Image 1 (cartoon, one colour):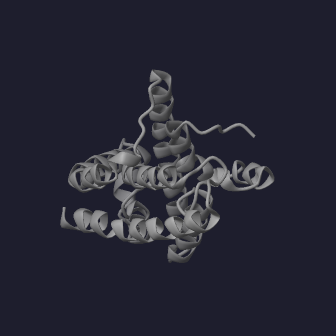
Image 2 (cartoon, helix red, strand yellow; image 1 turned 120 degrees about the vertical axis):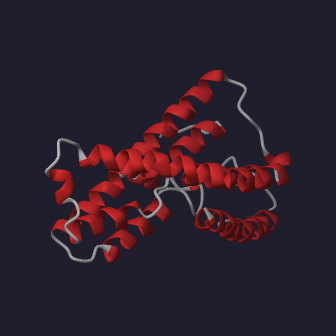
Length: 212
């Protein structure tokens, strides 16, 4: 529990840096940026914190790789049960526990920036955002599971995991909203799954236009 709580608290540090960065950018530009103003940009990063907590696995890939490397997966393969289903249940329970532990810290952040928050009025927007969030969690889980399966051929998968997650950090919209990029670059980003893990559910809830 302390591990979860500390990760949530230290996750605030990038948000603080982001606030100062975009404040300086909008101050220098003197206006908006592709439909974003300072308030909507801060709201976007608040939503990234929330979605990250809901869908991002916590060390699942290392645990699966360790099961494979140490041979513990054999005890599951010789039993009438699905290892995939077993790991999926752990993923869901881990997300529930992590959310329960960190929800107060996240709620405090949202309360502090409440004057930037504009909730959707349309029930269909809420429904589409929830469905997109669930699909985002599935993509994230199967991406993590697929990376972990490389442990059957590679003794240490940490390098590959860090490379893939670095691309996800950039192409998933954690650094900046992807729809501020030119349309041609957005089209390329939509061809990889990272686009739909973080940015897509946030954009739907934010009321952004996802069409080309």
